[in-house]
Image (tube, rainbow, N blue to C red):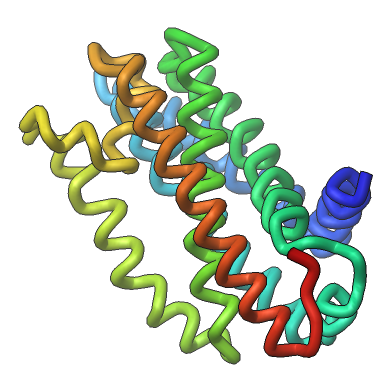
Length: 227
């Protein structure tokens, strides 16, 4: 029940501060851009858009949310409340993933890339959770937005560079173990979509557990935490 209440609160917060409106603008822009491109380019462009925006933007939005909560001393209240770190993390990740998946589906349908809806939704949802969890870890120990932006650079390089290399045609077998590659495989319904689903699920679960540990440590430093 606490997780549900937190999730509803996060969704209301995101709606109030324009997250939904911003994503709507992005969606309209991207779909318009897709139809401005030659039909032969549309599918690959749609996949790249989904990977670099709905799936990955959770990293930046999560940082902004956590820094805002720090500024408003929301985390101080969470630290002394019955809320557990895992509940806090799960609520944050799902709230962003719901927006990301909805936007990803709209762009994917516009680009004609939703060949397998189950794998596609799984890829965008888990990918968003992974990126958001990374953003949560980084923001938990950072005080300013400038520090956060600098901290995201290595994270973005680690996740994005191998995936873009795969997207451009460099596809050694071992690279399927990379989470960014798994997101692309699932969105494209590639030949390795099934193993990619299990691998991405592993990375997403691991990122949630690490984020929970980081948040627990952060809340403990504020004077309290429920394990």
